[in-house]
Image 1 (cartoon, protein in one colour):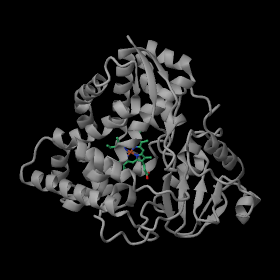
Image 2: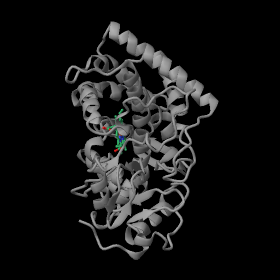
Image 3: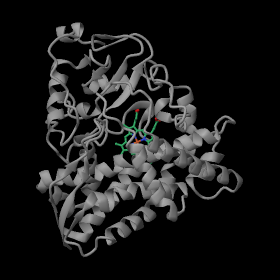
Image 4: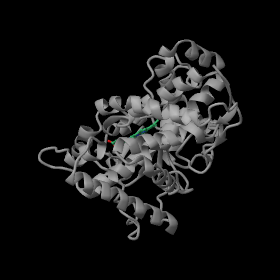
Length: 413
Ligand code: HEM
């Protein structure tokens, strides 16, 4: 079903307020998103040619229709940098059905909820170790001490990477994140990468390939072994696909989870009564984290590309149009969430779009939820008060929402 066209959308020429260049503390961006939801729910940007989708129901439609809104950008992207290692083979988020389903079933055999649950005591121990490094300090940076290192150490642990190599892994995590260039949202990158990053990615590729080949010969009880032995309809992952998946895990599971932890404290600082309620009743922790995910989503949008001409909310989109799905806007859509700008840990239902929707729904959801629950509980156990100082936001990427530094002042319990 389509809605009546707004003249602005039909012509694509009406006055559209300029999108903010970065996310920062989110205020300016949220204001822009609200205006766009009201006035230009599906907007084609004349500069980049991309379409932008802002309302919850339209986002559901796009994310539920992988046949029309594809995740395979190879048709519009420049050829990959021939000097850089290829990390795109079989990456789930860049693959469409039927191949996506097969890859996802293979990966799901290895990345099971049981495996994540078994990891819990280890995550708790790692969290305690990180908090111990700042034990006795009256103030410290939550992000640099705990929220940033923890997810990457957990991924290394899950893969079966020796603890001594964790620092290597952290360095590669940084290199991957810095491949995120400053481009207008919807613009297609030119595919080139700075030389020093290519060097780091090559090292990482060789390192991971070594582990994959080693596990083929002598499997152990870790994720890499489970990936190389998984089979669906007689097919298994190739070495290249396994390495790409491992690389993707590092990219997808690191900063996202770390941002969620920082965003949680920011939300409690803004709504201290709700923070107090969570401290008094830890049963509220999971629902509080879901509300943080809705209200301050670490990932702001995700992209698709039209596989053929189609119509969305009365707007015609030609084939090969990049489509930006603003989940941050869907999460604040007043047509779906009552009083959406209010942070409310009692919100039910709370079907936010932060982990995506449809066939690409985030595989790491149980892990991200578990890690952030453990960190929040540990923080509340250790300290009777936590006061948030001045947060420093990530400015460079238009895709992520959260802090790279969060000074806190604490009083031991
Ligand atoms: C708060 C933390 C996280 C957020 C907000 C998040 C967000 C997302 C989103 C929005 C998608 C869908 C992308 C799309 O539709 O194009 C996705 C997919 C995915 N995520 Fe996460 N993620 C988080 C944590 C993790 C973790 C911890 C892991 C694993 C270590 C992970 C692994 C994946 C994988 C493998 C996919 C691809 C699924 C597919 O395409 O079938 N994520 N994530």
